[in-house]
Image (cartoon, rainbow, N blue to C red):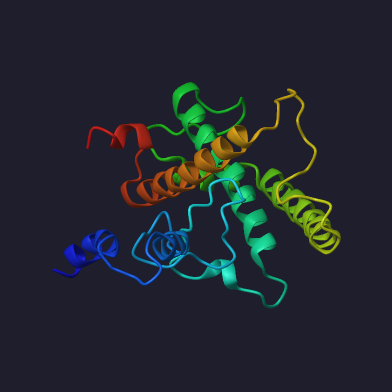
Length: 206
């Protein structure tokens, strides 16, 4: 019953009479979230960022404390989306074509289980990878802090475009959309691997 009320609430606004007529309705509509029409639009999400449809039910965009603000959150979303796209492609690549020479085979297990074999056989490589990731994170943290203070750097802009893609609003929207989808996909792959201990492709028929 409550869900039905939520669904009907946006439509009900169209029948509310106001002293200013259409102007008041326009203002009211502009203040509502596109993603959740029954909630007001978050004040900092004005639609200028790619993928911004006013979806922030937890109010994360309004956090402004201990160095975390909308700029930082946007940077984190783009970064995690890119990492998730690489992770998803990597898991599927290894399941289809197998690992690189010298690395353990899955033999019907999930890549989450194979990770511990890789840790046992190549601990130095895994440790080095974590060390490199830590150094990169420190460098990125400095760049993000400076970019936020100067306003000369857009979140996620590292000037890395070796293929020469034309940077457009459409491309930015595609990156955000695919990054968000990849975060769900990577989380699903990891979760099913931990629970079923089977490759993600084998779980599809199940």
